[in-house]
Structure formats: C-alpha cells, structure tokens
Image 1 (cartoon, protein in one colour):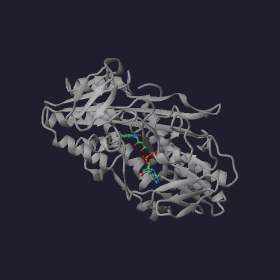
Image 2 (cartoon, helix red, strand yellow):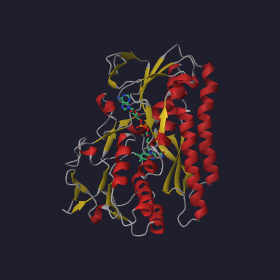
Image 3 (tube, rainbow, N blue to C red):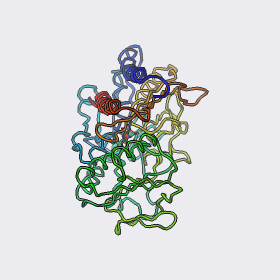
Image 4 (tube, protein in one colour):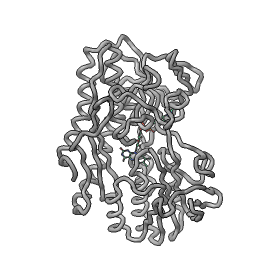
Length: 429
Ligand SMILES: Cc1cc2nc3c(=O)[nH]c(=O)nc-3n(C[C@H](O)[C@H](O)[C@H](O)COP(=O)(O)OP(=O)(O)OC[C@H]3O[C@@H](n4cnc5c(N)ncnc54)[C@H](O)[C@@H]3O)c2cc1C
C-alpha cells in the first residue's frame, strides 16, 4: 500500500459518495431553481449521476436526460462477460428508477445537434429542447481509420468492445467459438483512452477462462506503449496464474500495429511483421463523443477542456462536460471519475442557477481490476483544485502492493464487486 491506509481510503471514498447525496438532499431546499430546465445528454455513469444528483439537489428543477438506449450496459465488469464468466444481464441497467423514483424526464432519443447560442438541443425525432444549462456526457468517440484497415465496418469482424453492448457480446461469442490452441491478439491504444488498465484486465480474465477450457491457447498483447497502468501487479499475477500464456510486446519490441486486415484476420506491426489471430481485439485510439466535437466543445487534443471547479466548458458557456469526453487531467477516464464529476457538475449547475459561486470540489477515484475472479488489485487517488488546475492530493494515493498474500487479492476482488454494486445502485438504483 502506498500513501494512506486502505481502510482510510475506503472511508474517504464512501464519504465522498455519501457527501454528494447529502449535499444533494440537504442544501437543495435553500436553492432557487426558478423552474429552470437542465438537459443532460448521455445516460452513462457521468450523465445519469448528474441527472439524479440534480433532482436530489433541487426537486424544482426540470431535468431531462437524453439517451437512446433503453438498457445501459456498463464497461466495468464487461471483461467478465467477454471471458464467459458472467451473462450480459449482469451489466445491464435501465433508467426506470431514475424516471419513476427520482423524477428525471428520460427521453429515449439521440441528441443530433446543440446550438450553444440559442441554448437548444435537436433530437433525432426532429424535436427541439431548450435548456438553461446543459450537461454533456456522451462518452468516447473512436478515431476510425487512424490505423489503416480499422473502421466501423471492420469492427464487426474484429470487435473493439470498448463500448459495452453488442460489441461485448460479439467478442464473447468469438472467444467461445475459438478452437483450443488458438491465438487471441489484443491491441490497446496509445494516448488518452478510456480506463487505462482495462485491456490488461481483459487479457487476464480471458486467460483465466482459456486455462480452464482451451489451455493450449495463447494471448498476444501488441502494445504501442513502453509501459502500462498497474504493470508490476499484472505481470506478477500473469506469472503466477497463467505462466507462458500471455505475451506482452511493448513498442520497442515492435508492438505498434500499423495495419489491420479484417478479412485475413491479421495485423501488421511497424517493422513489417504480420500476426494472424483466431480472435483479434483491436482497441482504436479515442476522442470525445462525436456530439461534443460537433458542438465545438473539443480542442486540438480531441477532448473537451473544462473549468476544474464547475466543469463548465472553457469554449461554450452554460455547457458542462463530464465523464470520458472531458479533459480533466490528471484524472484517468473511469466510471469512478465520471461518477464524481456527475455529482460535481450537478452541484455547480444548481449553485450557478441560484446565483451562487460553486465551491471547489474534491474528487476521490477508486478503480479495481481483476486478474482472476478471486484476484483483485486497486488504485485510488484523491484530487483537488489548486491554482486553477486539478491536482492529486499529496499522500492520498492508494495502490495494491506487489508480493501480497492471496488473502489480500481475494479481499480486493470482493471489494471490486462491492464497489461496482455501490456505484451502480447510487446511479441507477
Ligand atoms: C473494458 C472496460 C472496463 C472498464 N472497467 C472499469 C472499472 O472497473 N472501473 C472504472 O472506474 N472504470 C472502468 N471503465 C471505464 C468506464 O466504463 C468509463 O470511464 C465510463 O463509462 C465513462 O462514463 P461516461 O458517462 O463518460 O460515458 P459512457 O458510460 O460511455 O456513457 C455515455 C452515454 O452517452 C450516450 N450518448 C452518446 N452520444 C449521445 C447522443 N448524441 N445523444 C444521447 N446520448 C448519447 C451513450 O449511449 C452512452 O449511454 C472500463 C472501461 C472499459 C472499456
């Protein structure tokens, strides 16, 4: 463990969750919403948290959540589904309780355009919604074609499975159909992307399943990076649990994929080597969700810069961008971060509508990864705003130790399950 103790960190994380709820229910009565309307685009961890928190904060607000899907499948725990260790139902959540219990107006549509000057959102069905403030949480977009041969059509044969849903189910089916002795290629992206340790968790859980059912199979990770998140812990786990099954090739070992052939099921690396996969999981480079870029909220990085206190766009006023689309470095793009940002944006919107200055937030993020179903690791940070930037709170970092006893790994795996239940209940329950 680095920094504060695990128990202290969990307490801090739990207090932050409870704190958001408390602030929402307690201070709302004093606020004057004037029947204002807040439109939230995207019902993932960021948007659904913001919508629910807004209603908790001020029952007088008209909160409209625009989301095309009836059921949201979470990326967290989707690697268990891909490996065949859980069903799709385990990661599906509906918006019923947000609508029925919390009074959020859920509109099952895609938002196709935003006019920041008129403050309107156009929906796929042609209707237009006006707003006083907008919360934009459309997740990620993919840089299709950045690697030749990998576009939307290719993803139907070589799934990325980096949004949960049909892509998750497709990769799961392909792995289930693979013969023993097959090769699974995983190619993670470089740059900023959703959930940095998740490709390595995916490799681990697939290895767990293959070891039981197709033990002659191999997993080849072709990586355009020299190192990766939680590397020492993953490598230790792989050596212990799956010796010889997972090979990780870094950038300097010719790990960067430069061409994908989805018909021939091959990938080509920088120095001309071709690798054939029985199953290939190519995860393309990413950027903010397409609507955020179409609205002009993204900068040259492809992500959306925001004020760290209010999470309001620094490009268009009255629009708050949260979750994976937002550029809030050094916070990693995670469920935990999106959830914290949803609560922060809601409090800021409520304050700004009531003519008050929002207080600078503190965010606690906690991410668990599974190397096997009963072998968990974790990484936690606290952040606060200093000199106009989000910075980690010194000494408030929590990281699982290497060379820990199996009992700790088991405990962390159990905590991972609990953490998922706690957050999904807080957002969708
Ligand atoms: C394999 C994998 C495992 C992961 N595991 C973890 C984990 O264990 N812990 C963790 O903390 N994080 C994890 N993450 C990261 C986490 O899933 C994301 O960071 C999180 O989902 C971001 O939330 P979001 O609200 O920004 O985006 P999303 O969850 O992607 O939600 C965006 C929503 O916006 C909707 N939308 C998009 N465009 C529009 C539009 N134009 N109109 C209306 N709606 C729109 C979409 O339908 C979607 O429902 C994982 C990610 C992956 C890929």
